[in-house]
Length: 334
Image 1 (cartoon, helix red, strand yellow):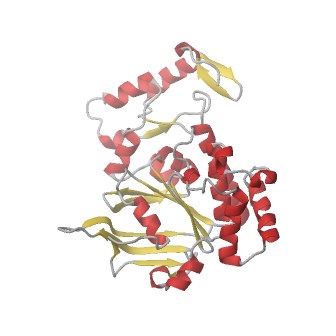
Image 2 (image 1 turned 60 degrees about the vertical axis):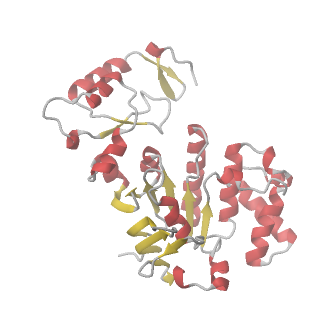
Image 3 (image 1 turned 135 degrees about the horizontal axis):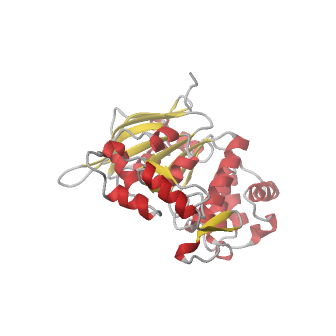
């Protein structure tokens, strides 16, 4: 069996209050293999970001990581690192893309300077070496190297997000923690960002801990997924299994919360036939032939009658390039 790159065992984190403590993470355990993309999904406040901060040791009081918790990166005890070792550990071993990362760039510093600050702190490089590395990383995320002299406000949201990812990759970390990396981006830009991340992962071999609310997006991007509820990891399995055969009731409800774009399917989802229980409801993926974007899922039960009505509706679809848009709702071409 492959030795995991990241091993989290019995992780328990409390936020200490004046009258009582709040348990944000409750006895969570999981592994991330080398080169793997492991996703954490769940509602807001379930503890996803708290776990991400714990892996990089970014918590400050009133957060408290309990004594029995263990976080091992490549066999190294992260929670036992002293201040000097921790400074070397961050960015070189584990890099993090924070929520709203495109707003984390310093607005008064040129992109070149922001790369230089990271490289100088960890590698003590010269200006010329930092400039060369900056150009290399910008090319990897499809941004022209001559734009390194620009300021963050001169880039679009998607480009700023790619710049943050490039800064994270500048020191060749073993693990990249991505906390809602595509928040506030439209679905087309989301797709471009995730495709680029996947290409970089295949090229450099780093692992990814991917955190998001969007379970449909996660299923397409991750190798394995963990589902969190109220601080607990209630289910973890391969992405295909989470998608097709979810076990926990909460995972099924997450899938059932997705909107359905087919009227017939929506009716069957909301009005199950007599004797049809929750275990009969399964998420179903809308194909490119009936949806303009791949990154759209519907939570519905693809019964025989529903499938027949879907095929009938597909007969009325008209093509627009690589995708198709429903003609009977008067949609304009993308």
